[in-house]
Image 1 (spheres, rainbow, N blue to C red):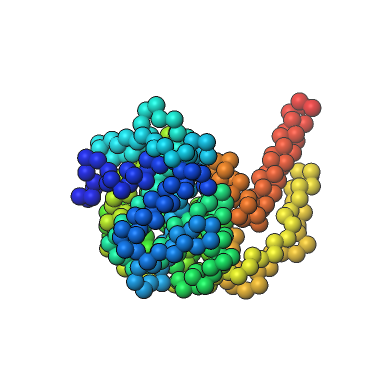
Image 2: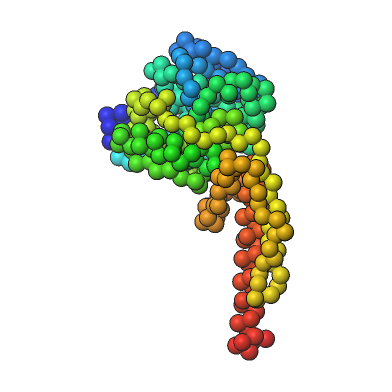
Length: 356
């Protein structure tokens, strides 16, 4: 641990995590008013974009930082009333206080809000986008893309602070390559000089930076230390968050290489192989192979392992299907094919053993 952690968490983080912020709820509105006032007190250069997204610039930079304001609290409980949180200084974890009637802590993405506010407070050059509606499928980011693409085109990289756990530099989301492995490794190496253990990962599901991958070359998501998100058991590793913040205040963001070319449109994906019912061949070959218009599409669809799908919540699976229909359809076809092939093998074994 570094000297960032204390016997109690930073009060700014406590203020953030004490709020229930379902998108477009009373709690969300109150929080955005508080956030705007907090940024004003920092003398930040603030713009309010469509759908209430808050955009801040500090100095000149080719790096856009990203978090989201909304949480998975219900609208009914997001009335503006504060929730009670607790901190264990031995584990260095923050969690809901016992008996608190909330369906999540909201470190997804209160942790990201906290990091970005502290970076702004320390005058770290960059663009800072506080998104609305991420938990509803990136509604705020989609509005930024639609109405403010001129802002996005200024940046070579977008870095979200919105990944659970403590060790991933996400370069692919929902099966789509959003950043290059070269840039991801460079970012991980920079972070790991500050008592961190990041590795490049292709197991991302969705955050707002994925929406920008068609314009911004390198779009990442960093693990900020929350776990069991979207549940009352959600916790935040404050020790990790403090170490990550310290690194974010020290590293040279502009030195991250830019090698990926933004993809302007998804490739055409042919129909997947179909189960034939034969134990000799479970597939029919597609009439045409997947053809990518140029080399830039080579990493568009990343094969996800099925363990990743099994670990997703229903909401994450819905977001995956909505934002990456090609990859989701491919995975479903393969899973169905596997199930059907296994059924055929079981039937064949039953015949051999005389059960049928």
